[in-house]
Image 1 (cartoon, rainbow, N blue to C red):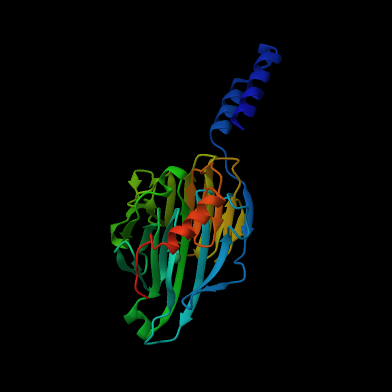
Image 2 (cartoon, rainbow, N blue to C red; image 1 turned 45 degrees about the vertical axis):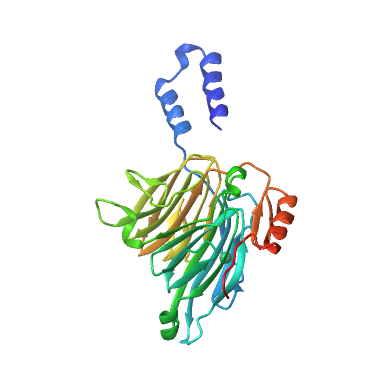
Length: 323
Ligand code: MN
């Protein structure tokens, strides 16, 4: 893109007689080359849901609907739109299962989730909290609605994102980050109409609290009616927004609640607007340009490594976790 624009400028410089060059146009061309709004590649309504265990009714936006590496470094987005659970004494959840080669990031918008893994980590995330589990070389874990919350029941809304790891980190040690809502850095706009909660990466001078292996931007953006929030990401960063609440406007198009908007890699800038209260999950990251082979709960580079993962699982190398 930049190369094409520069060659157009050079073409103009060399092939138009100097007395015909408009200096203002030249400067304008350069600015447009440096800063260009991204176009919308696709607006995706929530696909038909499926159940993960009996606790998580999720809409899978990708990889299902997109080419496997289209949102790299993000491999998977399972979104649990709002759903009401009746009270129960037996917490709903998904039992012990393995992961290897990536990280699971769980964001709770409503409801509470408890987590236990074979690396000895456990925790509960509530509204606005984030759980960032680096499975890497392998863990067993289980994810359940929290016990006391289950007894009362109520509204649940969540998202789980699988963040891929580059080959050199796939077999590093498992790690767990419990990120609490109150600890997130927040950029507040002077007009008080918007707030960017930085989970990972940075927004203006505010840094995220999650440690990541590759460059990742992840924010929850809270907007009030009339808010306008600008974003800038390098053009090669794969970028998508998930609308958690309200309807938002991007490039004069309305993106309704529960919809995912995928941006083309044809620019750097995005302007998010709304005329009602809204929440948007922002995902943007530098793609991992490596072969990718995924099967079930494993995301690796080759088929051989998937077979090794099953072999290691059967040999008990993922540790032990009680059901
Ligand atoms: Mn899991």
